[in-house]
Length: 314
Length: 209
Image 1: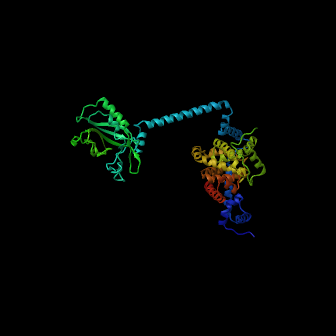
Image 2 (image 1 turned 90 degrees about the vertical axis):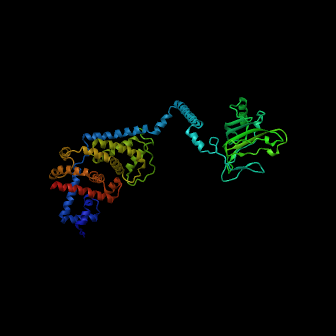
Image 3 (image 1 turned 135 degrees about the vertical axis):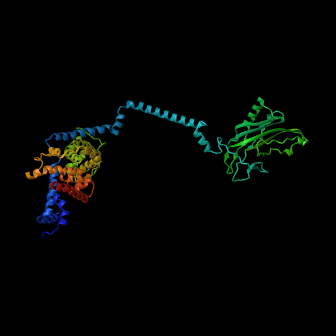
């Protein structure tokens, strides 16, 4: 029995009917509908006419035409291009590089020379950048290392001396940096002339405890300020500063840092029993904290003696 | 002919599931994968007319179609190792043609718009129908002008609709083959064919009035 289908069903299947894509049942049902429905039959004719028109206007090349020769050349041109791609491929060129081994060693030598040259050039550029103090790289490096020799800190004013051990301690553990202390108590200045003198020196005490940079702020001899230093005095002072050793400044957490310092060196002659012969060391830069000498002044022997007094201030 | 492709462009496909590929075609593919230049020439020879024809219908320009055909075969030889017989080789090549043509579509539309021919020129070029169809004489007379109008309307259709209709009406592909070539579902193919035919039928009705 052939099922009855309406126009709505038939129209949904007209494309499949024309294309032969319907199942047998659907094909039979649509065919039966087309026998009595002229509207749907006209639609099918239109669809078939559209297909015929498309095939009629097809631009497909004819087998005997000029275009057929063009298409036949497609095969040779494709094979030529495939062969060319193969010849130009990376693998092929890489293999060809090693076909002539005579070129291998010069090529390797040239490559090595270029590599070494580049490495040398880069190392020179790198070291030159670090050595130039005015360069931005050096400035950034100094700023990134507070307490380094190029970026010294200021010691705290709250450093004090332990009464029993004689060592510097920080009164405020959360704050200040200790003041560097002369280890030899100015032994290098013992060669000074047998007369009273005082020197104020601004210096940087490095992390190693050496004077890395200094400037003579003030000098005085025998109570009168001289206008110029004698050459011997300059050599003596320079040698004494070079020989001086300090215990480096430390932060409260124990890190060794470089600091700026003003160092007051004074040689005075004390005559007993007149205690008024003692001179009080002038303060150059306030505030000044007196560093206790190795021997207390009150314990001075009752005879003429030379006493070297050092004061430091930040 | 010697070995054309030595493992560079066409790699060994290994074991493949040749569900849709007959024995002869599978052997041809295997020879191509080993770099047999004769096999590669045979593969081009078998499919070159089909590829060129589809490229010509999609692009509408003979030089462009020829150039696209070369690109398609280069692509075929580069990717033949990935072919697993999930479809007939012809359908797989159709898919490459369509993808390559789609990439050129925008550029083609610009160029083709400026080189559109008039209806008389089209009739002059494609007016000789005796050798193409076996339709009745009355219908032939009606189809000359109708064919030109239908083709003009066809070129205005969206690329996917036009491609589906060309694959169906000219190349005679089944719905599932069209779906594989376009990379869509069979239902999508049906809807695209229906819309395309509706548009062309509207053009046909306008021609009658």
